[in-house]
Image (cartoon, rainbow, N blue to C red):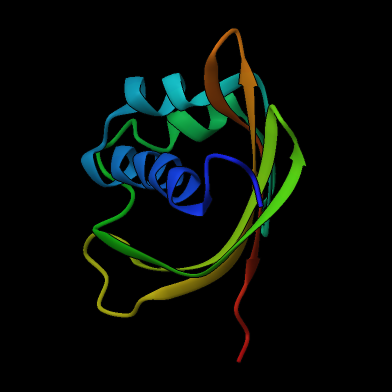
Length: 122
């Protein structure tokens, strides 16, 4: 396991979710690398696309992270894989995704470089 431990990366990932829940596009941009790529059920997204979902305010009302697993890629990279259960604002039915999220350390700072979301179907 990565020297920093799984909780470190869960905290980083939670900061992204908190930005979505708070509608904070600046915080979201700060956490994503300039060359971020997201692969979602709706298609590909870059850093600006990810932050633009907050143009009308929060995109998430609440969330939880569970079943987390950490894949040690290198000293400066780790892949956090987990299940996210979340509720969007003004909706009564929650959604769930399995997520893989690649975090890289560049210039002493950890940023998300890649994320892929796969819907939970069962």
